[in-house]
Image (cartoon, rainbow, N blue to C red; front, side, top):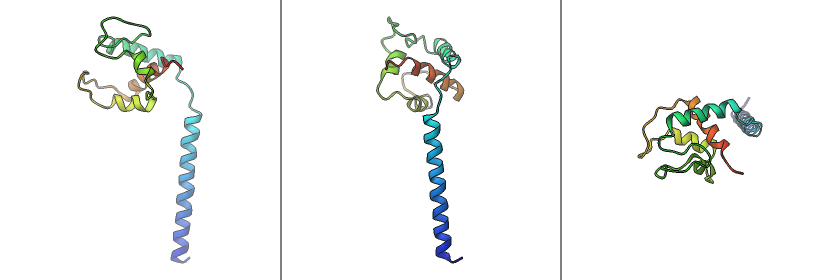
Length: 119
């Protein structure tokens, strides 16, 4: 096999693997099931325990939570997605306590917030 044949073969394999990867990402995203009620309830419980002192975690909750956005307001923002919340949980914020949130806890908190979105 000549050098140019090996290069073409390598490129063909690379293209095939890239296509397979992209197909799996699209297929996984399209076939992703909505979060279970158990996961949403667990996120709600964590929100009440950790976030309720500053944020209104219940839909329609009002009162002394003016300094921090309500979870409903966060859910209704145009850019709020599972990915944006994942990034948010991993970023420190000046006006928030520096909580250590495990990935599984961040996921259920995100599931709860996303369940509040009004479509």
